[in-house]
Amino acid sequence: MDAEAPILIAEDDENDAFIVKRALQEAGAACPVHFCKDGLEVRAFLCGEPPYVDRQQFTFPWLLITDLKMPRMNGLELLKWLRGHSECGFIPTIMLSASAQSSDIQEAYRLGANSYLVKPSGYRDLVEAMKLILGYWGICAKPAPPLIWPQGMLMPGVQPGQSAR
Image (cartoon, rainbow, N blue to C red; front, top):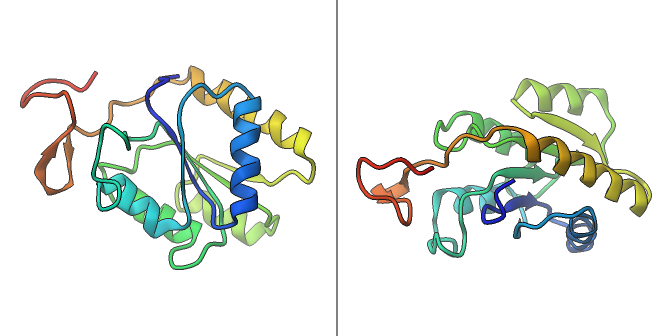
């Protein structure tokens, strides 16, 4: 796993966000973890819109973990947006939700979720789930982040015609 590229988490509940971050750290995540409160903030993050314009500070994530039920743009709407944008649609995306409804699970996979996990009820189980996520996605080959950011901005450190990796 690239220690510089972050994990991006979409979670509207501050307590859940804190617990997921702590579980990731305990599971051995060595990369930064950024949080967004809903799908609209994720979209702004990925597109480099304010307040995420500094691409040195807010580098393109290697993994997205999103909640299902969020205000403004929920997890399903976010999946639909992601898969409709070639610059962002390749990010491995995990739905982490309290919902175990088969209709939610089916729709998440239909819209392109790579995994759907029902939030474990205990903290130890969440840490174990994060270990599995980091282990699996950490050994997977990852595509290079986009060279051109929205508004025609080149990715930091990349010259025109040069590969990002």
